[in-house]
Image (cartoon, rainbow, N blue to C red; front, side):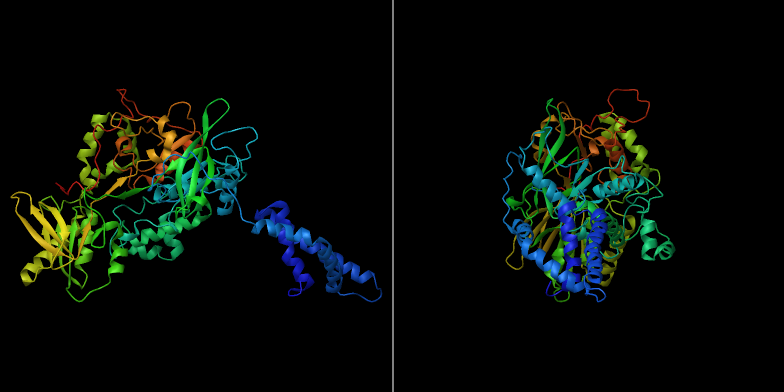
Length: 600
């Protein structure tokens, strides 16, 4: 008060008094704080005009006398809350959470209202017996908790946000929260190479295929950035990867209030009701740094797992200072820095788009003396981007694929693998060949393409960082290349959610090969007593087809999951099916990694 003056002091203290009475919700806090602050000032003004009439006492003098008296008598009232807030907080450790998957929760999900609300709910949940439901259970429950916040759960967050905006009265609105271990949104940042373009149309953004009128479309993003006309003039359907990532960040900022970044989900516990059924799940969260003391619990009616893919390396290969995966290319290159002109040698292992882009990017560096591209195909194979083949990525194709028998599913996967797996854009193939040929003509070769080859061994070198043995498969002959860095562009594998689900996973049905059975609405096929919804975004190629891990059907899938959560379930395709094998998984599955790389 001595610093601000009595009137300023009222303005400072009023919001805190109101907050302690009605909570931090701004809709109530702001108008009530204005009222509570105005009343004593008006009262002091009236008193000052009356007590010494016809003279007047200044408002500040009256407030000073009153506040001095109040603060003198009520000091304990003001000090007690401060002591409570600053006292160390003791929380019970979480027990019985099941094993934690170290890769789970790479991305983010939906929130309770704010990160503080999420923590508050978690603390209340920690005060009860884990996994038990009762009539006196004073625990906030969310309708949807998303684990992971890449494009898939970001699309779901946008769908939830737009659903809630349409439900203006509050009836039918969903409470959703998302968690992710990243500190901020990011998607394949290590491959945001200059000049690299998307391989999917901008119309297959996060919303347009679900709702062409959505304000979160790529076109609305361009309009907001002032680039719509300029983008149209490029005459392309495929924006740069850097620009599309900026669009994703733009969308993520719009639903930032739904996301708790820097948070890892480490386990799930069933909440068993009085009748023995499991209608809700307790999800155990922890700060991404792994500090066990930060463990907390959020209860949800539906769990949506979208934990993405993790880099795949051939057996026996371990990342190190000289051995990288292409997913970390740009950060690693920044750490490496630039060397003298033509002073470094690189080896790139892989036959797909990422491998070719990595080869091109390294070849453009001034310090690259040699770049060796190694793969088991005789040459780069072009991606089939023709119109009829692209129908395999249509939303309708998901219905057809799901309805097919396991044998037909595998046939379709095999037929159309060249739309996605271990293939390269024809224009990039032609550009790499042009460079290699021009170097042959000039007599100084820096780009070497080793087709029908494999990396037989990588070991420390006496004359450089590492020696790489490259075997020519038709003859078995090998040559050794001394390299500074080997980059494996060998693809990704999905994360098995079994360890994360713990005991809940025992109620999820599996196929004979161990793959989780997934219903048409992406909900795991579960058995009693589990009635809570567990949804899977991403690793569903064996049931939903080749587009499962791609952007092509992301918007539509988000809408289907939202409809399912709302109770509008569509468990089987609305198709006439002449067999009883709908939903059966593919017979073999595509395997993981780059099929254009032989490892043994």
